[in-house]
Image (cartoon, rainbow, N blue to C red; front, side, top):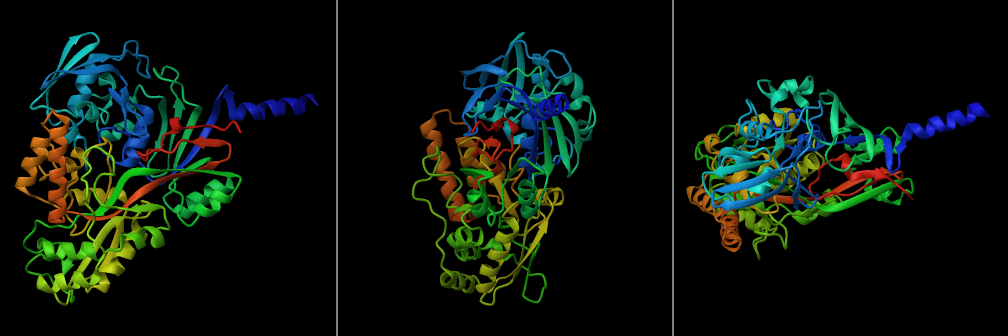
Length: 523
């Protein structure tokens, strides 16, 4: 009897370590980080990981509302100066004190990481200086008014100068460079497999519910669902749309959902007048002129996409048809702006009018290891083929896809973009402004869109302090993009997670897989 009692106690301790806390959370995720370096790649898998390990000056709630982080307060002291008061008593995971030197170092490093495929240049591009006022106060000077600076800072992880200075991105996975002030500290990182993290006992914020987190990369939707149903993992993101009805009816499973802030769309290589990659005649020979350079062709392709069918029949209600880059009620939403209506007959007429009555051949490039991308691409390929544009899909792993897309190697790349600021300006600067690394513009402009009038308008908007005036400029820029058909809208994700009944996960509009949003169930 005594032995049985000891075994029972041991079993309880294996899963619970204190009031409201549990020992370990096994989290099966669809998007794995490229790096532990929080400044290397602005992607969903990387942000999900680094949110556990590092803090930011300004943090955000899941709905993107800014809240104090390593800075307890911030204010604009002039049109081009912001003053931030730093949180006292914060320690790095190695026991050293967090100081103003770490902030200066991090803001200087964030936009200058070598070989970064998609970094944080746009968020820090306007910063011209960081001045230490006193032990707990810094002043950030910008080259122009930046009304969104607090939201930009919410993207920038603060790293330890003493640990990260002089090391490369690869060193963050194996050495002390990954020292942070976040709720967890890194135990191990195995590329394309798993990350193991342990609770940080010196974390300045509320203690997370789980002492240990194992984040496992399971790219295949069906395999991820099977891992949950078999008990191999406790929680998964992006359950397969075919599995969702069954999971919702299963008393062993909890499903949490919320409309997300991530849009999926295509970026046609519109600015190239000459031959374009991935676009040929029907015999596979290069075309002397790029069909996508003609707005009529881009509009035809947009009108040939049945977004309702894509959302409801192909992706089984796991997404919403995308109309524009923002959602109704959001700041900088363009009232009345809709996606081109589904009209395949008009699409064929536009192709003939543009000089392509027999169509042409095009390749869509997309992510192989992101949920929904491949089936959506295959469906769109069929829709375009029906209007005479013979289309094939080439899906690539993110580690291959992103560097090539960043070099604008594709004629029709897929973009998966999550709006992290709650206004359209960041999207316009990152995805549609003419690519210019020195100015921090267009790092995700994979389609090569370039319109000087648009660039000027966005620059003006992003320097306008008055919220109402800035919104009018942003709406105007959004409408300009739609008129140019600079992107082909597809769908907006509904963010879903499924868990064992013993785990409750608060669904997040920002799509981040954060263990801090999970807790042991009490029912």
